[in-house]
Length: 154
Image (cartoon, rainbow, N blue to C red; front, side, top):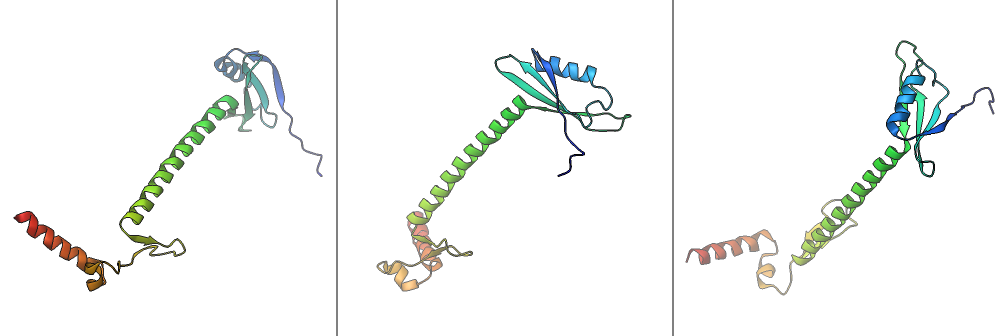
């Protein structure tokens, strides 16, 4: 194990009333590369339910210092939003899949989930005179459409 390197976290003892005040303190007091390799924790909100900000130096270039800030409260909200959206999408997909399977069943098609291609097929009903005569689905449909057109013109 290499003991030459370690990460040290600074922790600010004051709890700021608002996030804005905590951010202002960070921006005013940590100039340059002060947080490079030595990130700091800052808290805001109430003592009973403090929210945490992790501030990390994101550049060791003194000409362009940058600080990366991670707000755990904001992160939790974003994670919850993603979870809620995912749950909603999962419900919608499940409903759509159920409807498609109902359509497949109701029109007499067969679903074979073991196949990679052509999972849905049609087997003519042997008791149906129209299907028995033609063996293929398009011909019965063509005949039906001709009869429908004839009857609708009368």
